[in-house]
Image (cartoon, rainbow, N blue to C red):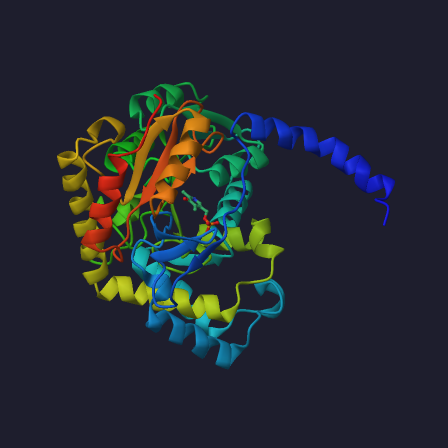
Length: 402
Ligand SMILES: *Cc1c(COP(=O)(O)O)cnc(C)c1O
């Protein structure tokens, strides 16, 4: 059949861009990744090739936990596979109400609200709470969803250098008196694995009368003493942070997101956050699994301990192997950026590692700043010591051009 003119037109409009991306090593493509067995996400086939998975944010291995699966199945049996409409239309079932109540306790706040994804939550929250004329200050490496929410809000937007609180303060000083100010930051940074001194950040916020939103996507379940609820808990700041956002999609092994804060702010979001108002609520299976995951991390720190043992083990092995020049040590999280630099080189090294049986995604601009291409190695409680040793040994044999 002949291709119709409108399809040809679309091709001519977009294919040059794809070709340019391919030329500069920027073309993105999803690999086919299949688990070898249902029990574990660590042994996989990547485009048909056996590999150990170091590209997953399932830091505790909870996505394969039978307890979560049973909770999800039970939720399906009771409530079905879909939620049928947004919650303002079809209401909130008891499972969601229990999850939000559990989250508020987890985060030690008055209230919490569930969103369909972390991306959607950040865009919706910032668009709802920031208005043109407000000032919002963001760490330069904040997650794209936080940046998109700020842009969409129309607020005046300024970035400070990564983790540089003096620079944050300089920027805050410039805000005119009386203007509403928000400081927005990742807690653990998704591509660098580091985090700010949250106590100092909150001190500055209070000094200048700024509100604070912290994104705990990569910290929920991994940090904190009593409840493992994240870095806000670990820093002892739960009651001094305006909004704590986080996701179920990483260490909690599921999908979706939450925000925790005062009743007034949560009610404001229910009334203003378009991503909450205009999207069908998460399906019951996802809610059931999320509730079980929060219960597990709150009551049983054993997986968290195993993860941190693996982080320490990887660091020891990497030092012994002399890999310090490409790593930032000591590690502050299970996210290990292995610096390469050039985009094409990043792609090539990532493929070399994969050929040797280790899957660690090469991360290139615009996800990271130009010239800072890297392998993003994500460690998990589910990795064995053998697998960590194998990875480190292979990293020492990679054939770098730069
Ligand atoms: C992954 C991530 C998100 C998005 O969460 P999803 O549930 O994957 O949509 C938001 N913020 C940060 C810091 C993240 O790393």
